[in-house]
Structures are given as C-alpha cells and as structure tokens.
Image (cartoon, rainbow, N blue to C red; front, side, top):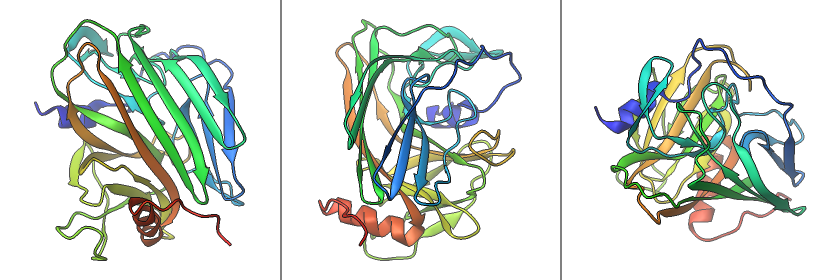
Length: 295
C-alpha cells in the first residue's frame, strides 16, 4: 500500500479506546497584537492555538494528542498496534493514541520568540523514543507566525523511505473548503483551487507550496511550506470546534529515509485571512520580505 494513503486513512482520528488521564494543560502563548499562537507544554510543545486578534478565535483542532500542528515521522513496522491495527515506528510530538503525553526537556523564550525541545512518543507503541528529539522555534511577524522545526535521530536502525508529514496540520472542522494552487504557472496570479476533501485521505499537487482551509465566510487558516509540492488531506466528520471530533487535515509530504545520524530541519509560516490574502503574504515571504505590522 502507498505510504501516503496509509497515513491519511489512519493517522490521528479518534478511536473508541480508553484514554490516559489528562494532566492539566500547561499553555504558553506568543502575541503581537495581530495574531496569537499557543503551544501545549503537556503535549511536547505542540501548537494547539492560532488566532487572529482581536477576535481571538482558535482555528486549530486539538481533540487528541495527534491533533495539532506538530512533527510526525514514520519508519519500519515495529510490532505495535493502534487499537487492533498493526502499526509502525512513528515518533509523534504530542503523545500517543491512548493519551500519554510527550515530555518537554527544554524550553525558553522571549517576548518575541518561543523555543521547545521534546522527546516524542511512539504513536501506537506508547514508549518514549529517547533516540529522537523534536524542536521548534516560533516567532511572529505581523499577521504571520513562523515555525522552524527540527528532528534528530541518534538510533542505530535504518528505516525504509517513507512519506513524512512536514508537518501534520489539524484545523477546525468548521473550515471545510481546502484552498491551494495546483497549476503549472505558480505565483502568476492564476485562479486558486477550492474543494472539500473526503475521507479517507486524498492527495493534492500544491505547486505554490501553500494550502489552507476556509469557512463559509471565505476566511480561514493557511500554511506555507517551502520545499514540498504535494500534500495528503482529508476531512473527518464530527462536531466543529477546537476540541471537536471533526477536523480538516492536510500535511505537506516528502519521501525521507530516517537512518543513523539523520537530522531534518524545515520552516513553515501560518496566517489567517482569505485565500488571496494567504497567497499574497506567502508570496512576499517567498521573495524574502518579512511581513510587516499592519498599519
């Protein structure tokens, strides 16, 4: 089975299982008066909140420890089971499918930046993967949040090449239409595509390296992910809201092999607005311009 489809069909939807007791959430936020971003320190520092100010409506979904904007990688089958489904080595920034939280080992920040380092949890196996470290650095520029991710592996196993989520993005189910550009003339102003993904996962060509979801008012959340031209996506039906069981999902993907000494670093940018506003801001970033504070 194609690994992209395997990820999309199964990853991070709710299952009828008994979850571990939830520790009190420890939250850290950055705000610049235009947008606010929050990380859950009881879930490896995963991003659980992104809102535009002053409305301050969180557009992300965090219904379980797999549902954030977060790092997730895949390797060889390891005998673990997600419920009754055979799974594989799968370090996840937030925690495991039973609710076990990932551990933060380092955090620091200023008024303008937040840094978190954590030990991921094997999604189906539930053990800490001490051979792995996940880090993120978050800064805000105007209406844009910049997140730099890093994953390092000090283990001895060479895993097979897999499609990796770079990163996993879970958005409020109320934002139902996916927006992106898939044509052959990126950044030329051609029309943006808009559709509603189904279940299980589907794939999209994303030739401008950004995608988002918007609601009935045409506004929503977008992510720019330079270096990736394809994405996996789906909609899982259920109640709306940050903690609702429904979600709108996508992940930019690349084929990567995790082996001894592996280290991977990449940067994404988040913004809130219409599809054209997303494209305009991301286009400025592509040209090397730091988004300015709105007058």
